[in-house]
Length: 85
Length: 543
Image 1 (cartoon, rainbow over the protein chains, first blue to last red):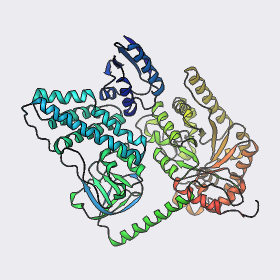
Image 2: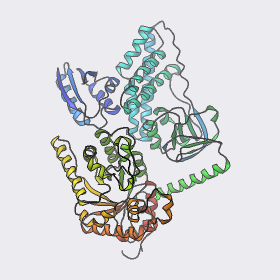
Image 3: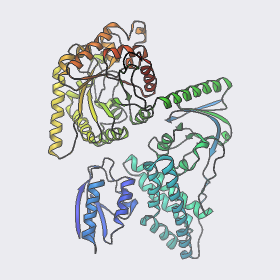
Image 4: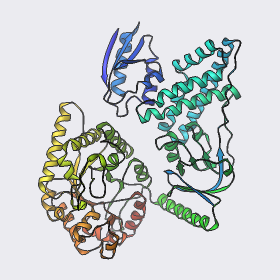
């Protein structure tokens, strides 16, 4: 399993639009991708669960990937977070 | 004639028949089904139709209101494809052996309740989106599609609530205004109304008996008038005609330069008090924001606004102005603007009391938060920071020191910020008198003529009995302005005027002669002032 953690910089946090883009990105990979904020976690391919975490600017989240393409997935997602969030 | 008052979402006047819009009542009846697999197939079919509808709505919205506003329909499509949502529906169908409509309604209610319970205004507003998606699915299950009745003549649309998908599907040429009971200034419907340039009110409860009756929406006073009396109707028609005349003036002068016939230039900026004023500034072709009053951030809250909240607002302002200068004035409360949670003591003479920069220097915790938010936003556009109520060099130096401290702190944290212009308000006689020394410290001056006049003439603005003594064109005030402009220019500062006097067209020529670089006025006055400036000067003086 591969992980990274990231502090959200986008002023509005993970609102509908970036959540949508993030889900789209996550669906490209085979691995199970999970985002965790404090004690709560959500599958990155599930839009409403992801929005339900209410991730705001300044929150630190950790993302994990587990599966056949976990290396590629974790790198791509880390890049996605840096670029969009 | 009956009149109802609501909250203005978008200004304008509309006169026409009312159309009460009601959703086709979703009467979801619960019934047992024999074959869950067939019911799930029926649900999947409805999902396909709904998804196709949303895709075409997205296309329509893209053309009508642009990509940012259209995005919501793509999000709706994603909600519709959300595995938790789909699993919940199929699970209910399978385990409870109920019809798909019931399963969708239950699931939609559960998910929207989850959003409604979140501690964030934005996310709470998403509950309406989930409901919208569920309603669409149910309509597809019942009718085979969710298409609504279309409008055939221009109407004032009155509804209890409008979902974003409903707002956008109406043909704009058949809409005069929106009036709804529910909804918020934050809702997509409100944003769409603004983008579509339609007067809109919220907070008025519709009565089915209004259907087809003539009405007037006054999107300045926030009123809906049913069966208007002749006098009132005529009055409103005139107001509407004036508004249209103004609009055509606006059309002609948009994008034109603000320059006199003999080539003297003036920058025309807008005074704004909140984010929706920014829209109005853009609409009136402001060349920048000359005074962004940051007080609203504090006045609208029960407690101090956080750095994040402030940052988001400043960033939005800069982004919306698309590369034009935005001058944000730091907190100016006290005097006539009081806020409970600041815990300020009552004063005998608040106009001469603990206010504006004085509070900020005494309460650096509050001030630093604002400065941090401002600097962080500076990477999103050309930002200038302006400090109010300055009377001394020491104050300016103290403020600059604090700003440097905050910059150092941000650098240490690797948080980016861009260079910002620093300016001060010249609104006390003291500042005007020492403007030569002050000019050496800052990049620009903005003359706040309202306070400058009040302090120069010793006339309380709030006291109507003094109106006859109040002369805004008093030579003492004009000399203060002239001195300030001359001193500013001598030391490399540009000088603007952001008080009411700036909009006084009888003084425009005087200001041009003094060499004033910028006038910042309320957005609706910009184009009129541009017209005035373009008429000044003798065309044949220079080539």
